[in-house]
Image (cartoon, rainbow, N blue to C red; front, side):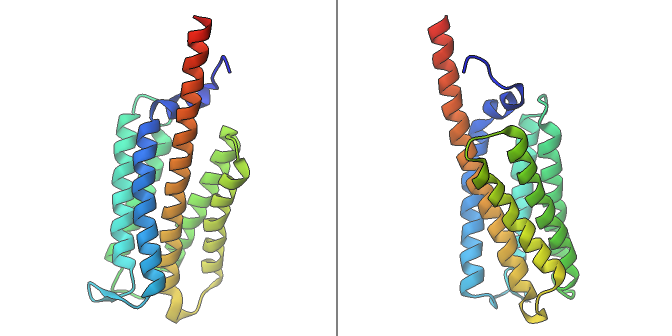
Length: 200
């Protein structure tokens, strides 16, 4: 491994941010997922369900990605981080302002959100050619399939719980992927340093 794939250089440089963002997303997503399963009819902000928490979680995720985008503003991955940040921020803000309207109005928005995130992870896994690609591709297929299920329609009395659980699961999986990728980039960076020392 004397040479590094140029596509990976910006990611290796920001591996610590991947780790921090991954741990935060995993913790937030997992907590909301468990709570939304245990008590799907919990009332927050005079709204049944965990949609307010989901909205704030997406906004927080968008802020984290915006910070990552700012740090990486001089690299080739700036636009990738920016697009992800905008998607999360816009989705979170729309959900927050649509809480008191018919939750079915949010079904299409959530469908688009889940499908885009799922497809992005599938394409990223295939493009970056990381080890254990099948697991990474699976983490993209899950939200994509959930989005298609929501698009086909779920019972009206469970649509809020489904939206909350699906987005929380997506956030959790994104966090786990970021943590795993961060550890892999750290390992790759150590190997590259060792090779440079040997050939120095």
